[in-house]
Image 1: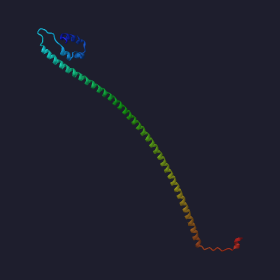
Image 2 (image 1 turned 135 degrees about the vertical axis):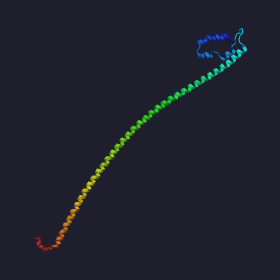
Image 3 (image 1 turned 90 degrees about the horizontal axis):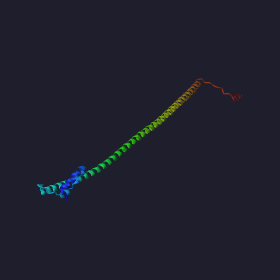
Image 4 (image 1 turned 30 degrees about the vertical axis):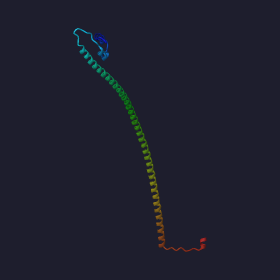
Length: 190
């Protein structure tokens, strides 16, 4: 068993040299229970000191256990924090990648839209040209049909005029009887 005065002196010298955490764990609960004190004149009651040391060692042991539990909790929480930081880093990376993909898709969609619009404009222009050509062809055909109609009308008018003249001639012939003597064959042959 350690003597209290020796232990106290040893710990008093170490108290200035040890950091706070080591000072708290320098005396163990077992040492507190096993420490004996020198007899002195008018000293403390051995039973009271022993009872106090037992109570103090139990409280100290509970504090050490709680400290160990808290240290393990801190380690567990720090591991969780690291996991969450890794997850956060992964999420940030994913978000950056997703943003880049979205930007690329948006840019590709804009390019595709421009291409489709230009293609549609080109097709519309070709369709307009084709329609214009058809209109011009139809107009030429209409003009040709009008010309043929005028020619047909002129032919019909000419025929009508000719028929009218023939009819007049026939009418005139019927009003003036003209007798043409028949000529003999001999006269005709000469």
